Length: 165
Image (tube, rainbow, N blue to C red; front, side, top):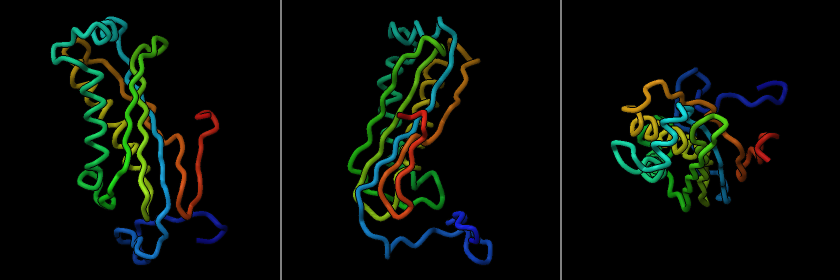
């Protein structure tokens, strides 16, 4: 594209969606971190904290769901490459100011394509799992703020949100 602006890599010259060919790319260490949160009533947060949600351990289950989702990203997002992830970490912390839970996920590998989608998928599914497990107590919960915080490795270089530091 002109002006040095990046184009849409998953759209070919004829405007059709396609999977990007990464066969000529160098293998580098690639890491991405994403975040999101689930806002809820203070009473719902208390139920989760006390372990009294009807479906059980909300935070532990959401963490596991996020990890599993990162590993299945290519099955969910049509043009993502299947990746051999070497690390997926999902952290879930209570935030009384929301009130609710903040979710952060990091995905890592050594490969030819980035792991941004895996980190974002982990966060999204972890947030959805929190909602699912606590919806009996609070159907008004809100999932928001899902975004990439930072990524490193690859031809496009590093990215970091100023507020992520």
